[in-house]
Length: 206
Image 1 (cartoon, rainbow, N blue to C red):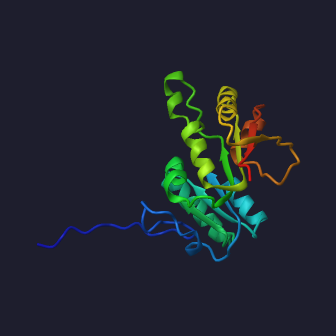
Image 2: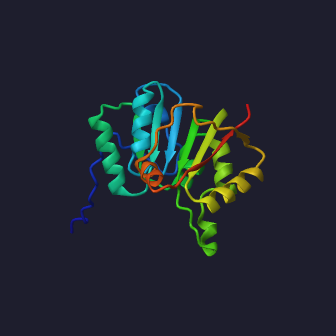
Image 3: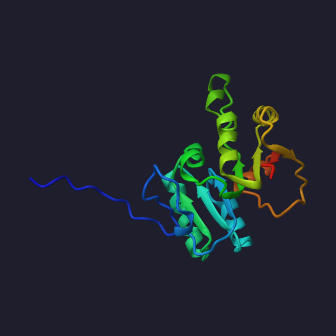
């Protein structure tokens, strides 16, 4: 009797599929250049990630997204744009930080508008808390940065308190003109509705 056939999903252009999900990623195998690495956690429709990769061809970028449809969309758009410094990984954000990314491999980590889990009984599901911050410390290089934005005021206050209680990361000022930082499609939509985003910026000391 023949064994049952298994279906392997075709890999998208620019998609990063680890050979082993229980080992650290050999990053040099997935990029053609040795360059500073930036991670976009929960990259969504990819508008921020794609704009950053296009603006900074001298850096490498990985977008982390668990929804297959979004991964496919970002991969295909990046391919059409000819972005060779972009990869997209379909995986959970915290697992990626804790287990897949090598220690001290990331120069910048972006977390833009994660699910705020607004109900009190769901706050334990929020990403921005101590296990996440410990994982951030693990993957950031010395002087590497965490950049976080949310349109949810209570979640911002929660996150600010979490960061204040985690002295291993140093809070930094984040003026509007600090550096190029594209707005996502969601951000433009929210701003059109009169909402504003609040941000936190923190650094791993050297």
